[in-house]
Amino acid sequence: MVEAEMKAHSIQHLKANEFPRLQCLEIPLGHTVYLEETQDSTEQNSVLETYFQCSSNNIRERVLLDLLESVMEEPLFDTLRTKQQLGYSVFCGVRLTGGVLGYVVVVQSAVAGPATLWERVDEFLRDFRKSVLVDMSEETFASHVVSLARSKLEPPRTLTEEATTMWCEVQESRYNWNGCIEETKELAGMKKQDLINLYDEFFWEENRRRIFSVALVGSGSKYSYDAEKKSFQSMKGAALADSVQEFRASSHYLENPSYRGQ
Image (cartoon, helix red, strand yellow):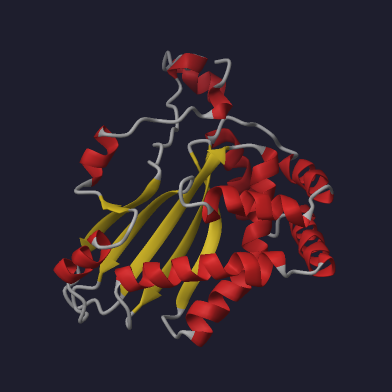
């Protein structure tokens, strides 16, 4: 039916080199911060979304980042939400943007401004390496591997979930319909040291980290844009982006591995 409609309206297939290409900007070394106020003047909450750019999409590091999320999500919530009482919304997760792997930590709070939220996130990440990764027993690590493998092999619960998975493959031009099986096989060979090595490369060593934070100051909160700006400016290694447009103009796009050979 689709082909008949295309023929009736003289619609041609796009050639491979005519497809719109999804690409991701390279985040510079260090910590770039885009600071803004919320449009709602009554908003009491401030938000920090911190993105760590990792590598071009590949199965090994994609699986390791999934494993990191599995290990980190509970202690992150316990530290920032339960113990420090920063806010109800605290989470972390893997991102795949234009063929580039990344990782985000998000905190929403009515009791702290974005600069303080970053300091708490950074403090957590520094403590996480020793207190969680290094001190984690082999048995605990193995339980995370098994749990993640099982979740990847679970069949889709809804048509929407299955369609979303398929469309992600189409959108990224991968067309790997058995990705979960391949990822599970990759998981089977993972060691705890592999996870520590990944963490050191993208989250721990300051001279190698590529971080972009979007920091929103609640316009109805007691925290002001100017005060938060001064706080970020005083931080070692942090650089404020004046505007999204200028940041894009000064950056370049990374190669999307899905388009290699096209």
